[in-house]
Each structure stands twice: as structure tokens, then as C-alpha cells.
Image (cartoon, rainbow, N blue to C red; front, side):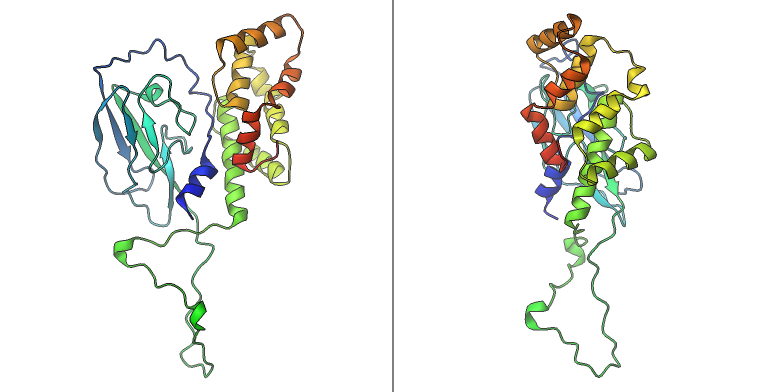
Length: 288
């Protein structure tokens, strides 16, 4: 599988917990930061830290050097939450206004000047296993035609053969990632298995992503948060635009709700027409 395809498939991960004020954070130009790498559950090996990072620097993440037999590396987690937030070769910028492809702000996850990235692994069998060797006692000529001879197996120096996913597997994993991120973005937690299975199958059966959002917004869990109008609008921006609201937009929509010129349900309809939402749905291979 081409790594750029994997990155595109997993991009635009949305996170509720990244929405916090960074204006009050102490981001000094003379501070020095560090990235440390952890192998994750079942991973082995070591990777050097990246040190001496200054505020404003751009850092390209190195290729993973950890190994995890029988598992495939998908990306780096800013938290140990099983959600890939950054990828091999991705550039992270250490500034106060940068958002990584995973929807997280690197500076928001600093602890004593250290950003910890944990490898995220999936146990995925190869859907294209090699054909069994022919029976040596058979009289049938099993020599393959020249154009069907497979490429030789990679040597140990080249590493393991890549896992090749079918189009169905790619879409299923993309849809699952979308559902994972709706849990984080809307209710601020990782998924439960029953809920994830329900929404994933709904989307695989050509259900609407906007309807999924409505399902989350109408849940007792979400309603129990009793959000203010401003908080509600902030969540809408996070989900439908993958961004924090601009001051003018936040004020306009909050005032519209307060004056009852629009209801919260109608506001969902409005945000669902945003081009950013169509782009997010296209990336995840789900219907708007």
C-alpha cells in the first residue's frame, strides 16, 4: 500500500480535546523542545529523540524504526488513545497556531517541553498470501508462465513485505476512523464497541455522515453536557470545519441562537453545507 494513500485515508482526524486556549500558554522564543518516540503496545526497539527544537521550527518526523511482529504501523499518537494523529514524513510546526493533520496542536500536548509520540499498530493479516508450493510428486507441469512469475521475496535487509489492502478494507478502516473521531470530537471520549459497530455499519451501508452527527448531538450523553450556545457553536466548527471558530462567526451564530432566529437543529443543517464538511466526508469515503 502506498504510504501517501494511507496518509490520505487517515488524514483529517478530528479531536475534541485539542480545543483549548493556547493564548495563555508560555511559549517563549528561547525555549527548547524535544520529541521522544515510544514503541507502543507490543512494539520493540528504540528511536533517538529529536532535541533542540526551537519555537517556530518545522520538524519532519522520521520513519518508524520500532518493530512489532504481525502488526502494521499506521502512524504516531499524541496520546495513547489508538488514534493516529501524525504520520511518517509529516512535518510538525512548533508554533501557537499550527494544527497537525490529525487535528491536534503539538504545543497543546507539551509536558515540560517534551512531545511524546507513541507508535500505533494494527494486527492486519495479509489479504494476498503467497500461493502454496506445488506438490513435488505431481506429474503436472506447474511452472508459471513468464509474465506470472511473482517478484522475489524481499531479503531480510529490505524488511517485511508490505501489507496490501483491498479497496473494501481501505474504505472500512477509513469509515471506522471517521466514527472514532466523531466520538472524540463530539462527546470527548474514545468509542464503545457497540456504538462504533452500529455507526460504522450504517455508514458502510451508504448512510449519511450528517445523520451520524445528528445521532451524537441527540444522544443523552451529549445533551447531558448542557452546553451554552457558544460552546455548542464551537463544537459545530470542530466537527464540520475541523477548526476553531473565528471571533466573528462565533459571535454571529451565538447571537442568532440567543435571539432564537435559528434553532440548534437548523444550525446543524447550515454547517452541513460547508465545503469543509464535504471535503472531510470525501477523505473518509462517507456520504455527506
